[in-house]
Amino acid sequence: MADSMSRALDIAHRQYGVITRAQALAAGVHRRSIDRLVGSGRWEIVARAVYRVSGSPRSWEQRALALVLSAGDEAVVSHRSAAHLYGLDGFGPTGRIDVTTSRHRRHTIVGATVHETTDPHLLSQRTRRGVPVTGPARTVLDVCWVVDDDLTALRALDEMLRHRLVTWEELWQCLVVHARRGRNGVARYRRILVKRWGKRSPHGELEDPVRENRLKLAGWLVLRYTWSRLIDEPNAIVDEVRDALLSRSCAA
Image (tube, rainbow, N blue to C red; front, side, top):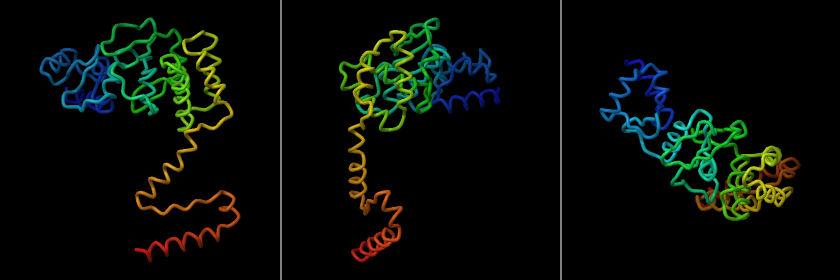
């Protein structure tokens, strides 16, 4: 029993403090032992056949993972909730967790908005912050369905590209695959791809100045060099850096 409980707790530790009944049984914890753990309050039922180890920190990620685990092996966080996991601006932690699961596995999940799919292999499952989530291109497509305007969808696309979470090849492939199936959001998804194709994300132009301002406010001396100068004038750059360090030390 001690070894099986240790294995079960190790699993829960890797999963924000939650574990499924199937995982606990596979670890060697007996059904009656699970019932006693729940009855004593050491384990708490947080979703269908999913338990939270008492004392584990509560978090949005914990709740999201518990709901996904309760929905089946192929389930993932999706739509707005997936956009939050990818860290996209404008998509904070959702109250209800968007979960996409296979149609034949559907059941009511308290606290989740359940989306069905007949093609779970097209979800391009990834893991973000330890939670199964739709792939980045599919996430942009799903966002195109649930937002109210093209601008919000375009910002989500720009964020994915700016953080290099997705490639253009993946974005176009997602369009080709899902357009044939008439999936919701495809028309808007196509519009924003065409609008941004071949252009630089406007947010990317602001990223370097923002980073530079933060460094300066923190007291750093920022020197900027082009690649051509690094190649053609390395000695001059070394001299400039040395002079800058000397002037900084004298000023101190």
